[in-house]
Image (tube, rainbow, N blue to C red; front, top):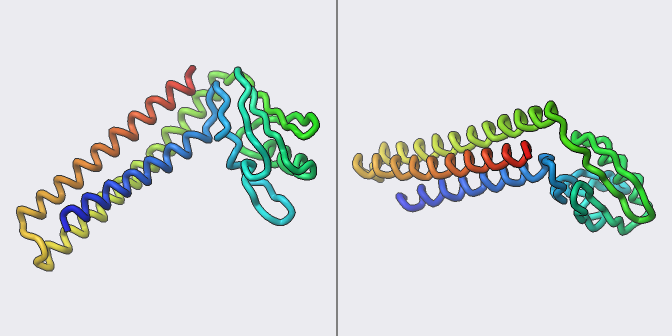
Length: 184
C-alpha cells in the first residue's frame, strides 16, 4: 500500500509535468520551434490530422519555420489551419514548401504570453492538488478499513506531500524558464 501510493503520486506528477511541457512547447517565443505548428489540426479530406503528419517541419534561424508538404493538395488546407490558429501567424507558399516568418514579439504580446503561461501553469498545479487529495483520501480509506495504522497513515501522507512538493518545485522551475524564454 505505502509504496503503491507514493509510486502513483510520482507517476501522476510526471504525467502532469509532461502535459505542461507539451503545452509550453506550443507557446511562441523569440526562437522558432517546430512544436509551435506541428500539432495544429488540419481538415484533410474528412480527417483531422496534425501538420506533422502532412509534411516535414524544419527551423531556419533566426525566425523562420519551414514545412515541406508531401501532398501538393494539402498546402492550402495547412495554410488555412495555420492562419486560423490562435498563434496569429501568416504563411507564405513556395512550391511544396510553406514558410512561416515569426515577427519579433512586441512587449504587449510578451505580456499576454506570460499571462497565458502563468494561467496554464496554475491549471496544472490544480491537477497536482487533485492528485494529492485523491492520494490522501485513499490513505484515509485504508486507515478507516484497518489496512494501515495511524503512524503509517501519517508517514504515507508525509511521503505523498514530499512528492507533491518535488512536482511543484519542478513546475515552478519550468515556468521560470519559459518566462525567461518569452522575455528574450
